[in-house]
Image (tube, rainbow, N blue to C red; front, side, top):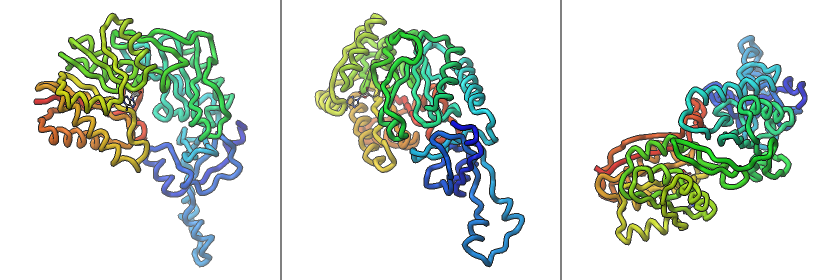
Length: 414
Ligand code: SAH
């Protein structure tokens, strides 16, 4: 990345500028008015389009005034992508002279925030992209291993990578750092193909703990970057209310199931992924728990179990994101409603439903409305015990709605 890139100016529309002033950090390509000689991942200065001047150029009868001249407004510094629909990701409202230094400071701030707020675990998200003002960089800690993912041109630059790795080593002295690759994301960002692999040290497996429970971690296997760390506080919340017989639907590696097993007499976990269930079973053994794991399509299984009159005291629903875009929100909500309806039908009086959605496009209000409707259809009266989000190491930044994506409701039948 050439340092002279800082001089490159990207002009954004008024709509784009307004978004930034409201606290957001993205400008879509459709709101970029001009971006000359920008390089992939370059540091740029962002300014608002001078509407008066634009009009003046097309309408010679308009005479320039001082007020008009003052309208070109500097909005700050950003990292530019020549490929993504999100062309501009703001990193500061001020000029940035030394980008590596800024990244260093942001990493230290992210680490300090977790030190202050994360407890009862040695596995958590250390850096969460825009939510830590480090767009394109995600780092998770699993005990002595760090897993890193880079999803933007700017963060993929060698200069950035070396700052990130040296700061992480300094902060954690990890046994290894693994880079996880999502080939689809890299292609969208026009980054060269690459394999997941070690970038420091040589350890790829470890054991971590959360809320007093033990889990295995294989850095080069599994979905996402390993466990669903964003559910950590919800596991503990769910366990508070659980008792009797429990069913964890979409259980993955058994996060909820294991926590419920401490309180419940019998726990069943359901997932369609055999590899996930194999890890779940290892986790159960590690904690000396007997859990029944069933490999099945959750929709079919819930229908069959509901038809067969099976009853539970606690059901967890944590499906994958059904709404990948705004366009399929209605279909997604129908999916959530169906699942919740079936789950409610299987709950005994006084039973507890823990129901989650990790679709950003499904709002907390949407989920609440859907569960309410499922309650009405199943003739159950529901009481809301908790309305929760992601664990605090996955910060929700006000002004950046996309950082608030996970919802978790805990309700009980009255
Ligand atoms: N509750 C888990 C995370 C669930 S992620 C935790 O806390 O760790 C969603 C899970 O749904 C994945 O494990 C995926 O394999 C599973 N899945 C996706 N579609 C499914 C289906 N139709 N039936 C059952 N499981 C499914």
